[in-house]
Image (cartoon, rainbow, N blue to C red; front, side):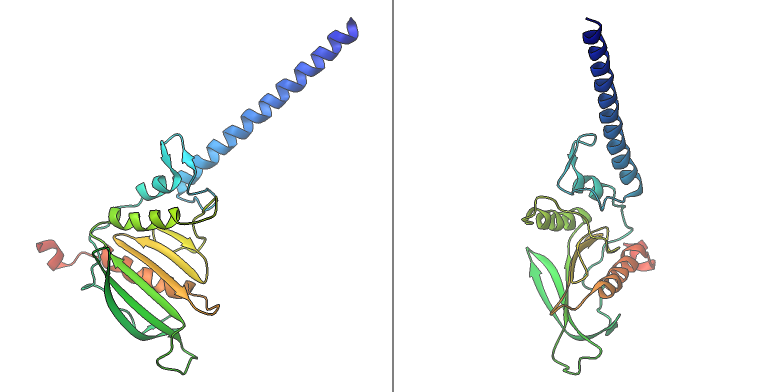
Length: 211
């Protein structure tokens, strides 16, 4: 009888310890998500996961935190630089995607002597609002075949997906992707393009104030 009681006490103690550990793990996960939400650092959080506190997907939580910029960037505001990072502009094109104006640029590496050849492509879609541009990247996430999708570790745009050879991102009302060919890395090019967009949407001049 004493052995039975002793065994029951030990079992109860073990269960209490396990319960405490599980509770602490859950608190740690909640604290991590809260910290990520505050710092906007959700690179280690699945964009498709559901945030029960916000009652929406993680990607929506991130995009909802994107600040309002003073103005939109439109094709008339933007001009591709002839040189960006390790690249030289080869040629450009204009088109439309889903009714939105689109500018496309093809860049070649500076050590590529074939002037009509190119090693990277930049695609910019100019939407009427940041909410419209967000739809492009959300649709892009929906198209991923992987179970989990994480934000890019490349610091570009308001939200970015991908890696050193192709990165898709949104910045304000612009949905963009930068892609390298034959193993060419484009992180520097993507950051240069993003900086151009950011300068445009963050700057208010006299003409903008009169509108």
